[in-house]
Length: 184
Image (cartoon, rainbow, N blue to C red; front, side, top):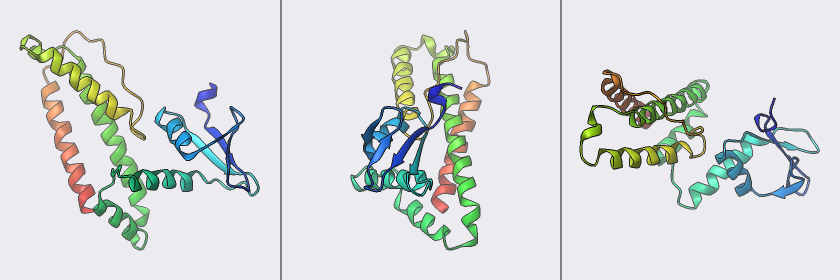
């Protein structure tokens, strides 16, 4: 197994300082967020007790970004998450969120494939510039924390006839997902 396939082990000392075991130096929450954005898995362990503190620190990173105005989670979603901790729904929420994010990542990958393939629109003036702009946007979206690595464009000569229908279906699924999330 390659070194980067293993989670990066961060040890928390009694002083609450975080120690990167690979580089033998201290790191901050922002450093950890950078590792995650780069696609690296991270595991944070309390040195004394051996407790896994990863979830606690990931939530702290999210809270700090939210407090700085990087509002990714709508207020309704945050409220519903708090409510889910006091209801029977609690056991369903983690699986639903994981499946929803996986579906979104898959949809983004499919959209990226569709935009990188050459299709019947290639002859339209300005299409190539629009395609490159969309590709750059999707790559940037995929680089966001938790959205997975960027997808390499497929080397296929032409889009299949059903690709427009597939794109419409993906958009419909995304809209349905957004409705479900807003209802939570």
